[in-house]
Image (cartoon, rainbow, N blue to C red; front, side):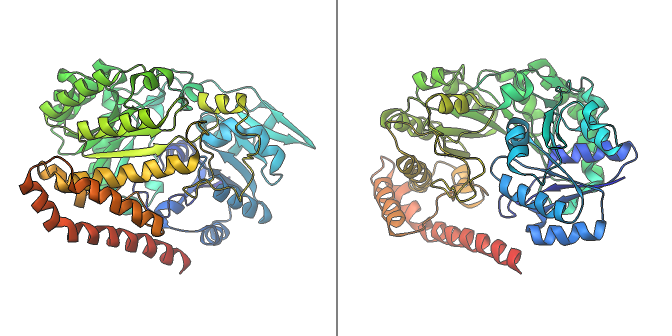
Length: 498
């Protein structure tokens, strides 16, 4: 049996990390004797025409495609092409997990949808087990669509093998590692609570560090991203991993996701001593009422305390913010920017609230009738950022206003930083950060007007005159960085066409 697993183009070839999910499935299939190939179209910057040509060369019996909600149409188009070529088609991933029955009804070229964890399910499919006996799938039985019972979670995730040799590892800027699966928290905007039932399953410290050491020894030193939803959810276990890294004297840099209510000085010091250089915090809002309403279970005071400890320890930190939560208004959204500026992270994001299947926000949107005119199969739908995922429609803030806030906050934070350079980390933010401050796009005259308004506000920001002079001296180089960012984006698109 020969199978191809595909990660379709999603972010224009700008993603720097391997697709861990299908890599683990690929490694599991390979370990059990299945002839498996992986095509990561994202890192290769291949459109579906190029991927289709590669599939023809491989000539598999099964084509499996994974996707997140954002790139579902690329995945569905790839599955349609595979079906026309005569291959069995399998669709998996988070979007397929929550929308599987609707997908099977709307897209007759899909033979099987896998929901939940995919390792054992895909192995059963590849081994030709009767579809009616395979847990965790939706399949066609003549003209009927049948959904089997869910598959139980894999308890011993230590037993899952690596699949890194199935990928072009030299092309990735970073390596990603999962040390655990699941998250015990219950945030309303996230699908994780329903996906993992709020269960946290951890790999042993030895296995996690074995994998990190394997990556370094085989593929060279690159920054490691520990991709767990909350690496710091279980303090004693996180410290175990740090101690194992320290014991082996590994020379590496790594980063992880944490929560402000699961860290303390002891843990953060241990992270730093083990080579952690960045911790990412989901703050989400700068208003306590909003934080309570989204079930974040933190407060602004806890955020400030955790950030100050992180600074004291000497770790860099990223903060993520979402604007447009149910109940958000102009005041609460401005509270969010104000807390971001007070924290002064080395990297940050401001994102309008998107609605994802499986999240509590999705249920709220359905209950309020906000998705009556929306269809997940409408390929012509685009939100204000040009994406195919609907925004939460807050009565007091329409989507256009939210998009404007997000854009202005990126501009404001960058320009405030330019006019109030605190230290070398401020310069690093402006010139070395790969993701921000360049999330804003100057598409038209209105965007340029917003930029000049925020620039004027930055000029009058309360800061030392010397810092202002330095900001004006650096300004041409900052603008050049924006132009170069545009050029890189355009070049990726041109390469894709060529």
